[in-house]
Length: 133
Image 1 (tube, rainbow, N blue to C red):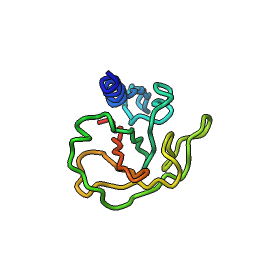
Image 2 (spheres, rainbow, N blue to C red):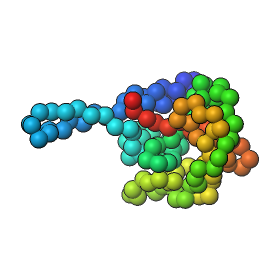
Image 3 (cartoon, one colour):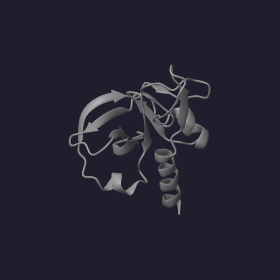
Image 4 (spheres, rainbow, N blue to C red):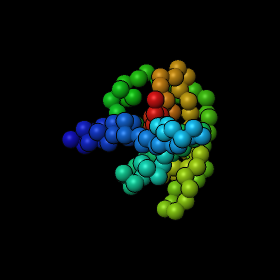
């Protein structure tokens, strides 16, 4: 049951991106979508396990079956968690809600979608980038 709920929450995050309407210079309305931002995710799930890398939010994918089934090998180190999120702070690159500072972020050798891997206590944890598209 826990896996199903986690899957549904992740699915909601992936498909429930906001649309915003902008009036352009010709006074016509343009609709646009955007990648989810940390504030939106934390509002929906205050216990979300996320981090931001290059402007994209990555969500812990431990309960997402297809991400876990991918044959991924840890490749090059691309970053590190440098800040821990606390209420009231602006979420920024290399900031995480759950991961401790100094946890390293790796890109898989063979990319299969927006997946990054972190190493925590000798264990590899996969994170899925929440990209609208």
